[in-house]
Image (tube, rainbow, N blue to C red; front, side, top):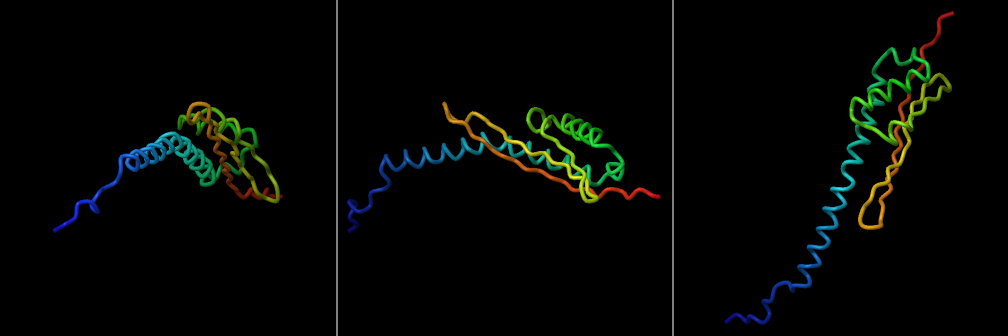
Length: 128
């Protein structure tokens, strides 16, 4: 005969705890996923510049405008579009988009996510 006293299941408190943890994980995913998807778009926009041969011929301001127009075409606005910098050093054009996103998480708690995107493009040698 099977003793039913040893076959109890999970208590209601355990079930509520698992549901709370699951709800927290789902909330994290739903709040943070759009920010990471936007960052992937920023990274792809910068990588796309690397594959365009005319990028090396452009001046710094023109490169920044080109990046901003790509981001605007992909519906990226705000901090990411304003954080683009172009530096030329040692025969390289370094295009960076370093920014952080702050978003409301729960009640009075905010989440801050930092992103660093960088692309190096070789400068064309000027002919003598």
